[in-house]
Image (cartoon, rainbow, N blue to C red):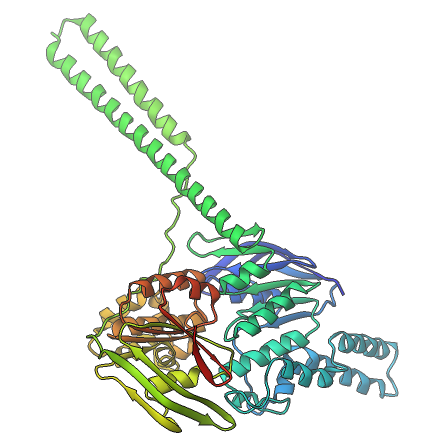
Length: 554
């Protein structure tokens, strides 16, 4: 069915802080609204409010019709112990809930005392079950999984409906999440970072799905190319200015309009500040002239020179009147608030002493895991190389990185790692902040040469302030853990930087800052990413394509 979602006067946040307020939004059929803002601005909070998962601090969310089917897919794939792929998809598509409701309604019909209300409840439950696509879901799941390449022969064993979600790799879980989305039949879709861990083929399929939606959609994404190809409007949650604004048009149009709006605000404030400063200066000058005139007149005039004293008094009054006029003009000025400066990632990559001329070498090397084999491969990474690595999920990119870093021995052939190699990995850095130890304590334990004050100062540069550093590391959001990982890379000196999908969970501003930091980094860089704009922006001198167990240089 066609449905419309309306939010009025919405406020979201938590007890200590309101993230956004007075937010109005209408999601009509065909609308694809991208939500952007820095990490912590309330993007995920907004989706949870629209989905009815959480209660707003103020305002309302309504649906027309009220029984419309709203699907909310959060950014982290929640993997429950013992849950199969089929059960996960049934849960994510809403089919499991619809089936449980229909079964309960059917059981109620068996009660001899059941009346018309039970029959009506069963009819409504049956309609929802059919609308959710639960009737043929079991038949559709294997087809979509196969179409997405989740079959035997990939880097790990194949994935079927009975595979356990907890046994899947990150890339496989991402494709199963995509399968759930493709199999869903929601009237309105709410997507939180749907591009995370998807390869280029998965991104193409996701974009095709979004473009083909007849209903409305609200999505949060850090993938600039996906936003540019998909959204019809952009809702900006501006944490620095404590405002929210809906921009019509696509993502690139939003970027242009936003910059114009920000420039207008800066110009308006500068004009106001300049005018006020000029009036204040003129009033001060008039006041000084008035005071000086009175003193001079009193000093030069004889006591009996009434005419001169009167003239001086009149002149002084005229000066005082001018002062009052200036002060009145200042008071009548329409005050323009100074635009607040946005937080910026202050990221430079700490450099270690130069590595050996040859960083890593693979000679006729193969790496076998189950039914999958990567290789044979013969290649060399030289000091200072900047290499971009792309390829579909399951093609062997992670295996290649482990091989180059000496973390996985070859099945056949040889592999060697150069001397004086200091490796920095974003994945490893992120993983350091998953325990229940406070963030500042966990960070200080890893880099004991840093004082507590040094740690707090460094984390603050990455937007992790006082309310973050005392929080348990495992209570941080994915984006906050990523920023903590980047801070760790800055604290450690590295000469080989390994970034495996570094843009996952970073906000758009931080991604652009990371790209700038990479431009000034002069060590060896191994960059694995499916972010198309990052591949265009970051300076690379070599590109490897990993596919079907082979590595080719573009």
